[in-house]
Image (cartoon, rainbow over all chains, first blue to last red; front, side, top):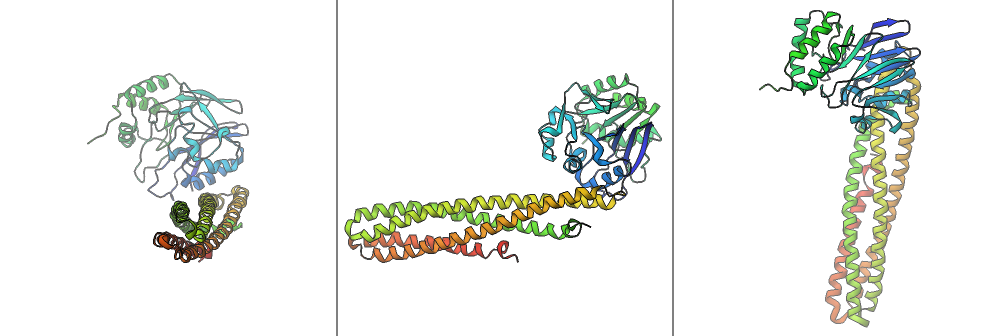
Length: 246
Length: 207
């Protein structure tokens, strides 16, 4: 079973990370899911693949009533992002899935109906969670061609999807980055290969540098907090991406 | 504990086997449909041949008309079988999807401290039962349609054999008439053998 860690709380406004399942088979990539709650509503960010649904569901339901989930935010179209969609919809068929317009007719292959999807335009949009405004921030080509991060201005938390992801070796499973220099080695190969455009990366770095971010939360690996957020942005800005070695 | 919790694991391999069996039945039916189309052309040729033979092949002419009606009925029957088999493939696919969803929901229910997954699992189980019942109904319909097709082909076999006898009275046309009625008989026998093996399919017998 996955564990839940509350990484931000202010009244009923919470960010909960759903992470690290020791029983997960090794052939499945490890993923982080995040739940944002505000008022009585919840938004599940990148809910994960169908095979890890039981682990995510059980962890989430220990903190929050799953039938009160108002929506799902899917950063992009990959199976580890939202192939569990049909299972979540069994709990609340009226739940909305917010996703790039580009994937609006692809993700329904995982489940849902025409009413399920709210298409996010390329320039991004605001999502309301019981009055809390969350911003879908464009991160196209990083790595998916229709890709969004999610920014919570109040919590100063940015869900960054695959940006900042690290494939951590066994034993290195702390929730937050503890030593940036040693951590970033596990992120380098991933970013060089998966991020497709230096131009897109440049624009993203410029955009997020201007935002107030206390925590940068990737879908794989550990969370960057405090000074490590800007450290990561600087590192990413310098990195040459879209490269296959060998 | 719901039935889904206890029986779903045993259903999974059965649904996979059923799907495989239905795919095989579908392939067999496709080949029978092809043969049935051939019969239609042959019956048309037999009618022309009987007309050319005139009064000497009057009996053969009557039978070839019957064979033409038979071939059209057979095509309709095969069309209905194809529709039913597609329905079965669709339902078994849904059952397979149900099994995966139920397995994951069951795990979620077992792992959840507050068992919020249990009502959803029950709703899923009702949906599973609906698909299973629909599959059982289609299976019965398909079995009946196969029996009807088999009876029809038995009649076709009688017609083909009678045509063979009538061909002997065809005087100077006796040889081509015998050849046509012989081909008819062979094809009807081919369809009969196919249908016979379909009737024995474990998809219907449940073995």
